[in-house]
Length: 165
Image (cartoon, rainbow, N blue to C red; front, side):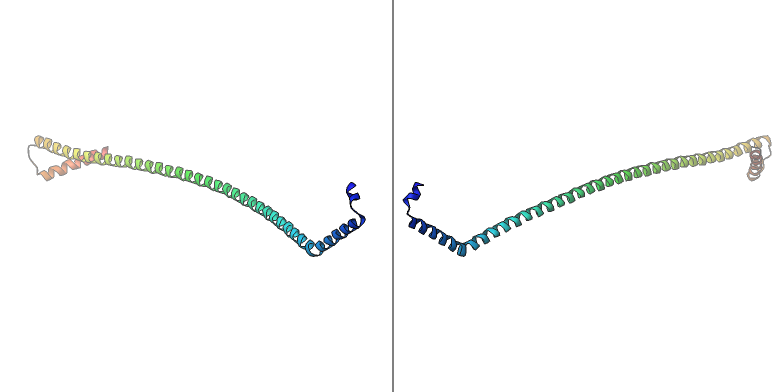
């Protein structure tokens, strides 16, 4: 209050009028620019915040998409592993089956070879028996027939023996 006592009424009115004129001039020339600048700043901040929100949403959707893809890749990988394992089991079974068939074929060929050798041995034995019989018959019959007649007689005899068996 002491400050007001130092000022006279004229000075106080002059200062008040000066202040109001200054305020009026600022309102006319500067006020709109300042508020426009503040509005632009407010809009820019709002725009930046909206952009940040959109970017966050976009990042969240991209993250969700990547996670879905990762799950899908995991599922696909699992399917491929299962398919490969199944294919491996199938190939193993095919190899086993082929080995069984080859073993059966080897056994069958061995049986055929054995049968062939048996038939061959029987034939050789038969021929030896014919020769022995001819020799024995020659010794018994002192008269000698031709070898062809001897062979025919012995072969007829052996066929009769085979027919009995």
